[in-house]
Structure formats: C-alpha cells, structure tokens
Length: 402
Image (cartoon, rainbow, N blue to C red; front, side, top):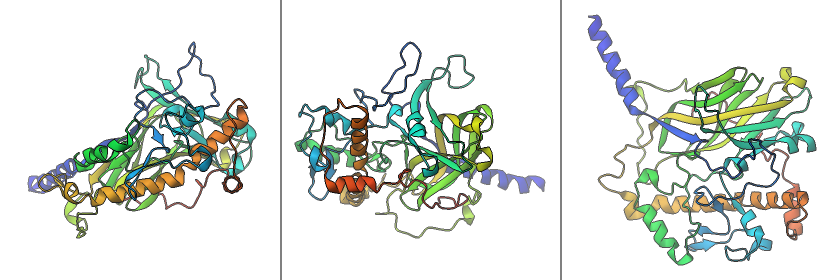
C-alpha cells in the first residue's frame, strides 16, 4: 500500500526535475578583463579599461542596425556624428562599451553619494588563489565602495556600463553592405539562439516559471543584504532577495520561488498562441547591496564584495520542439523584426551613458580632446539623478517572475 502511494510521488518529483532547466545566467569568470595587475598589485583606474581584441561583448552605438531603414545607423550625438572606425579620432573608441568586468560601475543612492564615495567605488577582475577550496585560479568580480557613517539605509548598485539588450547581433567589423546577410544568417540559427550576442552573459532565453536562482559569492561578514535585479520581457522588472552577507567564505545563496507549482498537472494551462509570442527573455539589470540603518557605523563604511556566477533553474516558456518541425520564424521573421525594433529603441535610450562617461573623463583628464556640449544635452545631463533612477519603486520581493 505504501509503495502504491510513494511511487507516484517519486515519479512526479522526477518528472518535475526533468522538466526544469538549470542554466548559468552569467559567469563573471568568462567575461573579458581589460586590465591586468602589475606586480600582483591592483591599481585604481579612472578611465575605462581598453577594448580587448576579440571582445564579443562590445556595443558600438556608431553602428546600430535600424530595422526601419534596414541599414546601420550612427546613434551617437551630433558632436560625435562623424566618428567611424576609420576616423582616427581616439574619441571613437571611448564611445564603445563592453561587458568587461573592469568597466562595470558602482552607483550609490543619493543619500550616500559624495565626491569621496564616488571616487572610491571600483570594480576589478580578480583571479582566485590556486589554493582556494572553490574556483581555484578562476576569475571573479571584485567590488569595493565606501559608504558614509550616516544613519540612513544606504544602497549600492553594481551594473554594466550599458543596459544589456535582450536581443542583439554583434555587427562590429561588419561592412554596411554585409549587414543584411549577417542578420539572415542569424535567422537560420535555432530560435533559442537568435540575436543572442549576450546569451548566458546576462541574458536567458525561453524563461517560464522560475524555480530558484543561485548566486555564488565569497563573504567577508559585511552587514549587507544582497538583491539581484532583473528585467523580464514578459512580466517587467523584478528584484530577488538573497539575504545577508554576514558570513565568511564561499556560499551559494538561493532564492526559491514559493509560488512555484511542482505538480505540472495543477498549473494553469496557457492557451495563448505560441507564435509570434516567441521566447520570453530574462535580463540581468544589476546587483544591489543594501546596508540597513542599524549597521551604519565606521566598521561598515568600507565594503568589499566578491561574486563568481549566477544560475537559474526554470521551466521553458515554450516547448523545446518549438521550431523543429515548422520554423515559423524562418518563414515570417515576426519576432526578429520586433526584436530588432526593441533593440534599436533600447540603444536610443542608453547611448547617452557612453557620452556622459566620456565627458566625465574629460574633467579628470584634460588631455582628452575637448568636445562641445550643446545646451539641450547639458540640460539633459543635469536632470539625471545621482543614482540614475535605480532606486525607483520595485515589485515586491516575494512576487515570482512566472
């Protein structure tokens, strides 16, 4: 009798385990690194790490595909409009952005931002000691920032220097006349890989109900709470809490979706057409570290943080056989065109970050070639908040991204 009861339960659990998919969302160990330490010492760099040869994470806003005109466009502001790869102007390279670890940024909440804390914020790539119990010799992200000794709830966001696009094709080095051929080549790839410049580098495709998210970090007993912020193409922005970093050594911090339905028979059946809905994507927005008011003292004013990777266990939003028998997208390209338009509009919204950073570097390094700032651009820059809007209202932490 007991066997008859337990056997279906075991089979159900096994079926659920097979149904779920475990993937690396982002591994900081495989991202490019522009700077290498000299004599084993890391030196604070005030300018962006140089773009490395073969960096597949580069975003160049002077060469963005415009699906409306079906041609590459230069989205840089007017004062950089003539910048091209052959212009010979060093400012052109400063307009390129990369997911390289050395180029990630730390942004503090407005109550914690001042000239001193801003200058002390830095992100570097670090290779773990060969004697480490985990990830020996591998690269991780190392973060340092300073917080004031004020009785406020301080926050810090660690994010790339651009918003990671859900859909993007690397067009660097592609001649204008070859762009359409490059895009057609991308359409012939499997649906889960199309327009996937940042797949498994902050982007996951075909994400349905999430079972859990795991963050692998190295703790130094800092009284900070860790959150991972994500953008979902189907349900919007979500913030996932991982608890306190008041521990020492390696730990796998896990967020578990309390609303995940293990029994697939009890899930609500989705009657929406599978095409052209496509495959919903999950995009890494930032890592957020919160210091509660109770921990605001001198011992918590200098913070260091180490992270290796983030993985997600989820169910597919669409079947694996989505395009194995009839490849809708290869015929109609509805998702491709929609994705290209979304990627283009996102580039329009985020391109100014490159220009803003370039202008900031000019103030630090007078040797940089001077560029004129128009009145409209100067006014737009002055309206930007200290934390770039990262502390806007969020969805409750316990709401799953299903």
